[in-house]
Length: 131
Image (cartoon, rainbow, N blue to C red; front, side, top):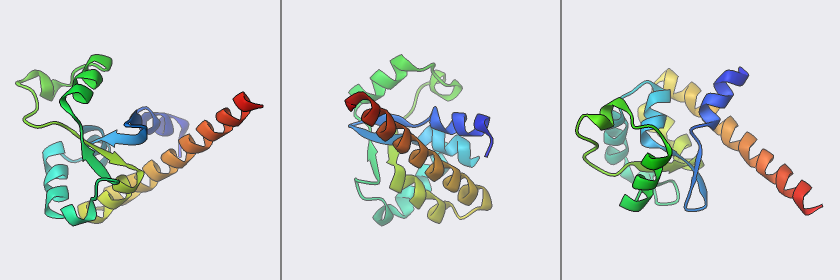
């Protein structure tokens, strides 16, 4: 995997509620599907997504995210009709089973690798600060 590809995915991993997550919009972009379609598949398979895999952001969390990042084209034309969903590492892995495309499977593998790489980075930095 190229470093550029790795950086793109890692920049989409955020920490919300003390968990590393990715937002539905960012995952949909990586999988090459519309956010609406991704969320439809999740809702059709909701039993696969317990709260430890996926949760909906609160209005305060969403406002904070919007203040940190540029507003996307879709959000400037009237805004989202619902608050975004955040997917944990396990939720991202589960998405490949409900989207069922080669792109989803390969993207899911890359996302899992990046979650692991970030966890290792955090752990190694935590150790060096405590030494």
